[in-house]
Length: 356
Ligand SMILES: O=C(O)c1cccc(C(=O)CC[C@H]2O[C@@H](n3cnc4c(=O)[nH]cnc43)[C@H](O)[C@@H]2O)c1
Ligand SMILES: [Zn+2]
Image (cartoon, rainbow, N blue to C red; front, side, top):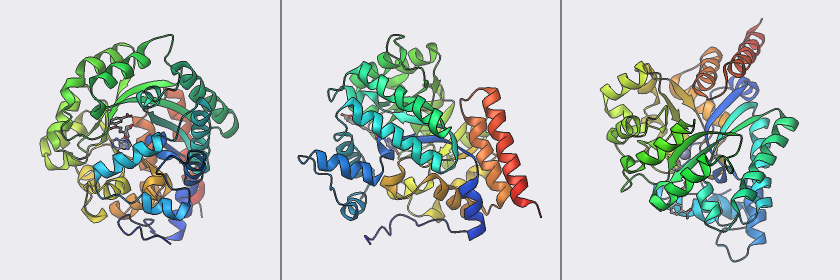
């Protein structure tokens, strides 16, 4: 087995708690489309495209998915993006991601998609939208998992990528029915958030919610920029918010959720060790914390493992875990009846589990 010692193994609280997590109905708010490609799908695509440097062998793949820093992670991420070349690749990937989520009892997920990366590689924009929508509808009918989309700007690719993402997200003839939000991803260093304000303004005017990544690899000032310039309603990661008590108080007061992805932060070396992760400071300050998986196969994790990690770091029992799951429902962009349905399911599941 390849050494993945930089990535924590399962939170391993106890077997019962793990079984509870496995069956707990959940919502996932921060998970990337290409970053969710299973090792099987990546191997299959890599075998189809021998010109790629992505290994076909799952053992070698685990090694390939061991990152020296955030920049290295983005390089590897883009090599997997390069494998997705046809609308059928897009449809298959999306459908399989939904299947993996359903297996973990995820009832609702907001999947971050970077359409610019696909259209610039030559996939037709309407065929791309048709592929994700077809997979979304099939997944809902077959697995009962509701998918929604967040289109993100890959900030390091410049304002051309921002313009293209805003166009695809706001043109009524192109934007897909499942689109609910607008994001900003990729490296933060050297990519100031305020330059993206006009694009977020357009997306918000078109009815989309604002959910940029911020404070993953830079300080709390980036989170402030995301709030004030991009009118963020949730923050992707927001890890460095812990360095600024005023920011924590602001997030708590305005119920602006943090999309916390603990294993991701260790795998990309944004945080040194799990025990140094600031999640406890967030909950202590009253911030609405949601637990997410980011790019699960690339980080050797899944959403259930992230809940197990959170249980260990926050010393949670079943009720505490159910509250975390409800946080994600509250912070989601699902409609009120949809939220109420999942909350009821979480409550029924927890009561039944704890009944003598
Ligand atoms: O597609 C391109 O051609 C391209 C050119 C230059 C830069 C980029 C990117 O920066 C793409 C970044 C890509 O990474 C995704 N992602 C996945 N996980 C994370 C994360 O933890 N933090 C930030 N970004 C992440 C993001 O959605 C972008 O698609 C692309
Ligand atoms: Zn992310």
